[in-house]
Image (tube, rainbow, N blue to C red; front, side, top):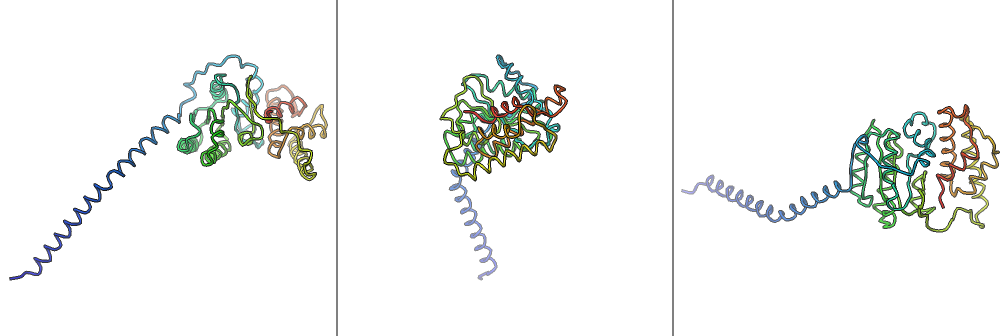
Length: 314
């Protein structure tokens, strides 16, 4: 006698077997793609491990010779990075570009600065052209909320020579976001440097070692056909930042307001450079008072010349 329930169970069992078989076949078919995904993920992780290093600064033992004069000339920058709270009213990014020939000690100088400024961790991105390493570095630096960190980007000029828009966008984002954090000091190194380039505009402070290659002509002079309103705007910007410094207690000595502004405008090509120059003047003046060399916040021609040389190369 025909049993409808048994027939239904048989049909259901057959359907389940077909579904299981289809699942197995689908899994086998997808296996190569899955294996490829796992392999690519492993390769990506290995590439990041090769491109990125996070190490305690206390374990660094840089060997640096012949740079005593340079270290002495940047004592104010070292002090600002070591005691950022003392300079918190000065609005400037914590990014420095070291330019010098190959094997000239740029990395050793950066590591020495890490120790002198009291950094606790050194995060080095050996390949700043690797977008995955840049993303990992940003996450790593952000994770250090209280510890002082140096982000080191060796041979950053190679990334700008290749001009990969995606990589450069991520690199710019990493530097800008990191330099805005008071506990982070960003240092990059380069063999060659071109004034007024994207790399130039990204770093407010430049340190040139002997033999540094500055390519291209000096384009710092305002074009003869520059619109009068541009010159007027630049002059107003210079006077604004000088007035702000004076409002905070800084005063000129041995140089008039007109001389100060005209000296700045002779080299600065945009408002950002004007601001960087004035703030670096304030940094040096504040350092000199902090260390008891003077008893007031003095802005002199010597301090101005030093600030301009740090911001403008070429």
